[in-house]
Length: 417
Image (cartoon, rainbow, N blue to C red; front, top):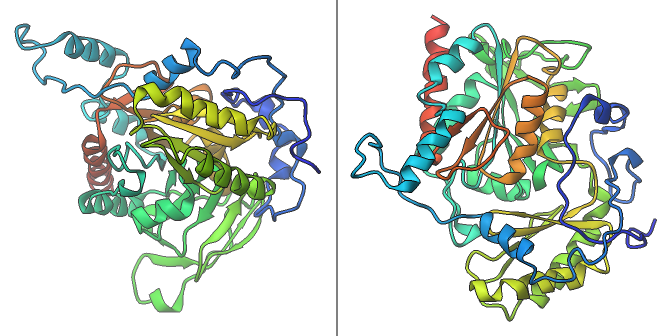
């Protein structure tokens, strides 16, 4: 199949919301691993009609406005907004916004009360959520304190990191084996190296419809009370042998990999003369960072991307926080990744499950929307700026994310007494 031959035009595409009707027919096509060259289900293709001149005028105000809005300048928020003389318009605007998106920290009692008797599944973005946004994407390191907080929370709840980065890069930053990693906006999902599950986590899993079975006690851990190692996980998508090495759960865009690599090389060459432009290979998507590019040169960045995408109509363009992203044109996003992971863990369609997703970027909205529309769980937006969201709650920055994770651990331990 020639993925280049299509009458569609590369466009800025936001995938449609996930609903039960869109999930229909996809379940049986989710394979443990889609090998390169194998045709993946047609239901995953995202059909984009031809739109004349959508990207032809890269200087259009709508595009530049979108690029500016993707990462507004950070402002210091004054804690005491009751002091009118000290509060700025930005402070007042932010705290008015928080009426609609209250802090997950101040609302923790409400969240924990709702979580009583439920099994929590935790999903986390990386950049801007577990680590600060930095000028150089290769330097987005998480702190040791944050790593410790994530490690502790993963002992009590199944935890996944869903990022636009490749799963290899995210793992290099996080360095925790006990997590699920969904890289490339959920297009590259990996199971933990070893599934070590304690008594708390055991209550988070349930064998329903043969989704999760085949767990046995590992001899090396037999002496540890309330501990077992899941050596074989049988999901509705096949056997996953996860003892000893990480395993690909699902790669719905595997067929696009050669094309993505080709486009990456072309974009590196095309943008090499634009000062500050950084092109990042995220396996199933290519990220073009313009955070360090002078605003006067932003149209040049857009022009480079557009000229290359003209020859690749099966790819489309989206934008995040001062980044343009080239992605395969398929019906897959972070929302679908959350649904896939819940199904794989036997936690979908269960009234006693509470998924919590924490993220800061517009790509996380797909996951927020899934949780909101399905009335399944809580989306928590990480933002120090007012903006519309499908999330229920908010946190200001990664430091507040860390406090929220610590609060979850403390609550879980106290509720187990």
